Length: 158
Image (cartoon, rainbow, N blue to C red; front, side):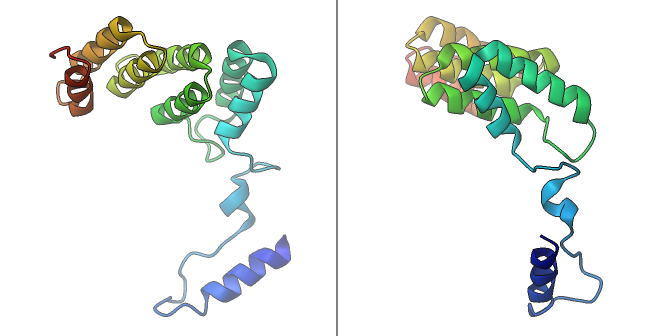
C-alpha cells in the first residue's frame, strides 16, 4: 500500500496546474484512521442482513459512540437515510423504518428523515402513514418542496 500511495502522489505531481504544496495522498486519505476502510453503509447493511434491524441499530450506535467527531465515518443525518432507503429497495421496509426511527432520535427536527420515512411508507403501500410523514416533513421545514410534491402525487394536498 505504501508503494500505491507513492505512485498516486507521483502521478498527481504530473497533473498540469498542480502547484507545489498541493495536498498529497496519505494512508489517512482512504483509511480515515481505520485499519480497514469499510464504508458505514456496508457495515450497517451487513449487520442487518445477518441479524436484522436491532443488530444494525446496535452496530450504528457502537460505531457512533466509538468514532463520532473523527473522520472515520459520516454520522450526518443523511447517512442513515441513505442506508434505510437501500434496505427498503431490497424489500426490507420494516428494517428501513427502524433505522429511520433511530436517525430521528439523533436528529429529531429533521425534515429529510420524515421525508425518507414517507417514501419508505409509500414503498410498503402505506399511503396514510406516508401522508402523515410528508406533512411532518413540511411542518419541520416549510420549504421542503419534495414533501409537498409527494403529497400532490398521492392526491393529498399539503
